[in-house]
Length: 169
Length: 195
Length: 194
Image (cartoon, rainbow over all chains, first blue to last red; front, side, top):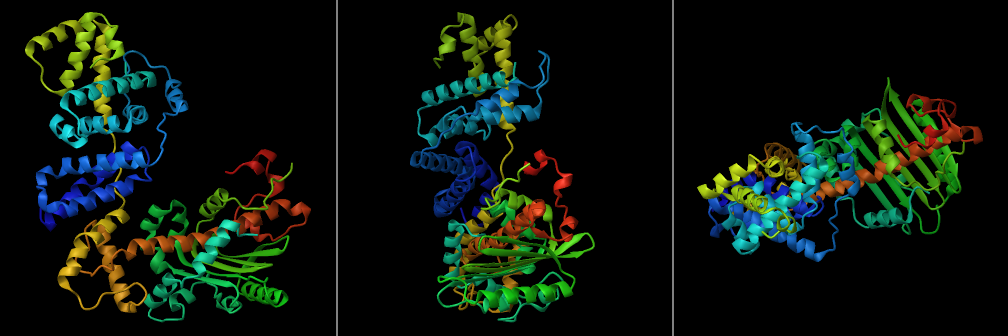
């Protein structure tokens, strides 16, 4: 990857990388540093990378940087029960209600906090970033079978959180 | 006292370095050592350099000079860095002289006379005194310049037992934003008003 | 997947749930798909699970991204492409923060603003390393210091106005900036931060 390809890759992936860090770290303080570090590492390793593999490489790097950060400090990732109760107390939903996008977005963001950082990162890689199983397995260093279990379990937890929040049946 | 112990430490730390921003601002205007004539023309601008001359070698002196030429282009970056700085986006000038004295403010009476003279000369130019507040060993004066309904300039003068503060902001001042900033601060000495 | 919930479900539901998750991962054999469809036609709960999993997918896909801050992007350019350009050009003179001539400082500032607004790495101007981000922080600190002094003084003025009955010296000018007098404020209002 030459300099121009690097510049294009940064412009293309910077927001995705930053967002992944924000979601995994559940806050913004470290996420900017992590995203910046990932992009700087891309510069260092640019000669070994092709433009078509940069996206998954960056997410893998971001994932590892996030996990490192979390290992270094004690961070409590807890869902605020009052936030969930707030969602439940909203107007009663009929069985035929259509999903309100704003409610769904809010509920998913809260629900993500119920997952461990690793599981959060994995489910986002699959469902938001559209990475393949092989790419994710390589990114997080897990066998395919374990990865499948994690994804199924995480989706189920998120589904139940959405049901509790009243935005899923 | 305006300065809490934490702020006092920060003021000392910043006084140990030459204010690069002030120098760069002055260099950017092409006139080292003097304020930009465009700034000097601002109705809300007040020259606080005479206060800087009151410093003594035993104490610390911080001079801050931030013209709109620096504040406005970097407004987005500044508010990204610190959301409370949004009020700075409308300003043409932020300036201050902050003096601290290890052995107490020298010649307090002379300083108070100088402050009163500054106040009188500003009032003659249309500035209005908002308040004079005396608390313990400190007097805080606030002056305001209005243009129609808008506040174009604010000057704060503080003479305390071991500090002198001159602060001046000029431009389009959003008082609501300043009030919001004050609400976030833990200002010692402001008790709940009894019913 | 061996979920505790699945292990207590009726056999058909457990199988269907497994298939639902597998379908999210990719295609499944036709036989499994047919069985699933037949089961969903008769099982309300599994249909709800299907809808719920679709909602999870939709929610995750539509999570809004948080833009990477411009100042952080500046720092990335400064430490990568700009640093390389600088080394390559081996310019004999480089603007420094304090020692820059006024003209160079103005040119650099204008060029930065232009390239900043385009979200592109500044190409024409020799970058002064990481100084611009530090400059922002320094400007921010200095500005905040003065604004806090001013805001605190205004707050004191407001309290002095409220304590007027106790002898604080304030002027009618204080009315102009909307500070409420005690007689117009209820006790609850006085304590309110808004």
